[in-house]
Each structure stands twice: as C-alpha cells, then as structure tokens.
Image 1 (cartoon, rainbow, N blue to C red):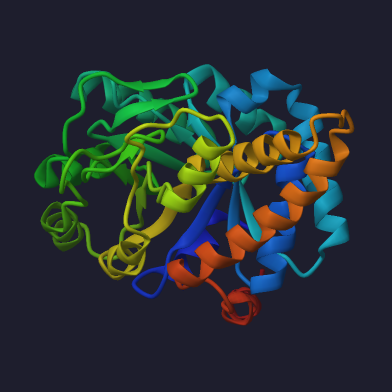
Image 2: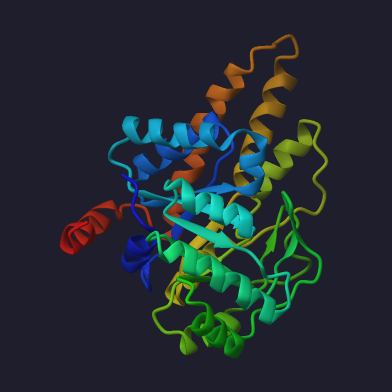
Length: 317
C-alpha cells in the first residue's frame, strides 16, 4: 500500500526512523519488500536520478506495482531521491511518487531557496511532499558529488523552511555519501541536530549518507578480489538517538551495494565455471532481505506496521 511520506513521518517522529532504501533492479526490489514484510516495517522506496537513467523509469514503477501486489501487507512511500528541478517536475507529473527531493544544496543559499520554492509550489498543487537539503554532505554517490561539504546552520534552517515551505529537510550533520564516510574518530554532530530540532520542533529531518559500511562485508569483498581500502560508515547504534532528535527518515543505499557485490564476487569466485547470473541473484535477494530486516531493528521501525495502520485508519486514509 502506497502512502505519503507525511503520513509515515507523523507516526515516526520522535519514536523511530523510517528506512529509505534505493532500488535499481528486480533483485533489490524483491529483497527490499521481502525484508520489510518479514520485519513488519513501514519503509520508503527511493528512485534516484541515476536509477532512472540506468533503466527506463517505467520498469522501476512496474516492479514496485508488482511487488505491491505480491506483498499487499507492506506500507510504503515512493520517493524521488536527489532530483534536480527538471527530474522533480517529471516525477510530480507522473502521479506515481509520494514525494520528491529537490537537491539544490550545492547552490548559494538564495538560489537554493528560489529553486526549492518553485518545486514546492508545483508539488503541493498535486498533493506531493517535498524534501529539500541545506548544507552539503561530502563523498560521492552516483552523480551526487559533495565537493565542498559544510554543516547545516540551525538558524539558516529555520529561514529556509519558512521561505520554501518544504515538508522535510535533509541536514548535513557529518555523514557522507558513498563507502568512505569518516576518517579517524569523526561521527554524527548531535549538537547540530539538537540545535536544529530545538528551532524546528516537530519538523521532519532527514539523514542522508547513513550506510554503516559493515566491516564484515568489506572484508569478504576484499577476500573475494575487491579493493575497498579504508571504507567506513555511520555507527548504526546512532540511528535511534538521531530519531529521538527529529530524524524521521534515514537513507541507506551503499550498504545494499556492498551486499550485492559480496554475494556476486564470492559466488563467481567459488563457481568459476558458472555463467547463470540467476543463481547469485537468488542468494542476493535472500541476503538483502535479511539485511533490510536487521536495519529496521536498528531504526526502530521493525514491528511498527500496526501503528501505521492505526494512524491511517484514524486519519481516514
């Protein structure tokens, strides 16, 4: 059942975070739905600009619709991840998305406000929510490059939300895109997060670049011929503390890529004579489902489907 991100955030705020997971293909879609069904967790399925260019957007939408029929118990939102203005408008007009993210965080503040406000006006006219970003994460993921990372200014966040009318805000609090997030002891800046929540009480915040980069996955990939040196991520024990401070949506993408890479590297290393890609594909779907369920436990979203259903029933949705 597709719902709005607003409905999910109303249940999650201050209690737990909704896992936002990207998909690019069939195997990810199956593993994602299976993992959330098994853990009874609401979730957000994200389609990035990169995913839309990897294959036709209609394939992605059709896979989601099919998965919705196979797992009717699932409750989720469909979100455009890191969209530019043109992509946001295309997603809005499609009528398929629950929400869109306009990422103009690389622009000067006034330009970011201007672009975001235009997208908000177009989206709200169609009943679609908008996520914006203020501050800039470091790292690289798909076509998102954080060349000049800077933390979100709490006072500026208030002005930005008031002037743009956005429905949620992705904040830069020390996380980073990709597999190489931290050096040394660097971690999430909870002081910045608390300052933003204090100034924007009740307003949904979003944490990007939140993959944990499990070291066992990295080690297994390297043992199977990979070369991931110095890869590190967010401590997943920090997910719930972030949720208690207003983070309602936590994006996890790179970890899924690690699971995919580990399964395929190990399979073809151990079966060098094999050419049937469906065999590692089956393994991945099961492994990814287990991974998703494990992350939902850490986010606090596991077992929350009944709470979401009760909220939807109460609100008449």
